[in-house]
Amino acid sequence: MDMNQNEIVHRTVLLKESLNGLNIKKGDVYLDGTLGGGGHLLEALKMGAKLSLGLDRDEGAITRARARIENEGFSNYVFVNEDFRMMDRALVRAEVEKVDKVMLDLGLSSDQLTTSGRGFSFMKNEPLLMTFKGYPLPNDLTAEKIVNTWDEANIADIIYGWGEERYARRIARAICERREEKPIATTFDLAEIINSAVPTFYKKGRTNASTKTFQALRITVNDEIGALQEGMVKAFSLLSNGGRMAIISFHSIEDRTVKNYFRERRDRGEANVITKKPIIATEEELKDNPRARSAKLRILEKIVD
Image (cartoon, rainbow, N blue to C red; front, side, top):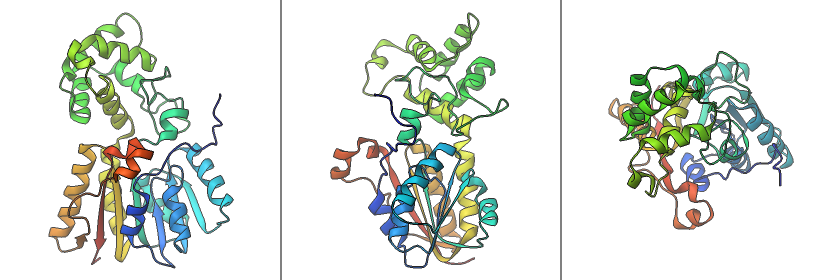
């Protein structure tokens, strides 16, 4: 059965924990930098947010979230098709100076994985785009451009650095050898190359052999760590005193980046770290949503400008 492109399949992770941790109060201005299916933003409105702003690079996500929010009867929201690293620009457009609560739910949504057709999953044969943009432009970086034009050393570096892949050099070498025969165009092309490059025992492991390479390419295409670093700095500057920022990460590189930034602000005496250890999903949530297994939530409270 074909899936309607406006149908939301993404299930919001750590919903109760993140919204309760943000301590949303009636009259708050809430900013969701990763709108996705709108789950966090909808709950913030139900909890009494005066205004909720939602940002997303994917126009399709905004369309789906708008339908969901309006179906619940809310109109006190503003959606902006923008990367959250540009949230300062988005707030100017929305005529908002400060926000009380910021939510960042990082990484890949289930909607993007299953219905986008942009090559995020090695389980489906799709074009190798991997961009969060709904409609990438010709000059935008894609995974296809990386695997077909970057040199072997750079490909190995990103697979090792952003994927923490132990066989990064072998995979990069296999990619460069294969593209000499014909361009690498689809997810299945790339997955087959990865499987040919790694040892047999590795292919039989619990994690699919393509997982880390696909992660690394996606992070590179979307500059996810750079966006996170820039986004956290801007979010902190836009927070009102006493405001809170919650971030959900899904792999160790993201979580380490968040932890270090929160610690830095705390050590400067500018913030309190509300979560001494990251909050993880309960067994009950994991039964309903296995994707939540890798989710880690950290929360920061601003105390001075």
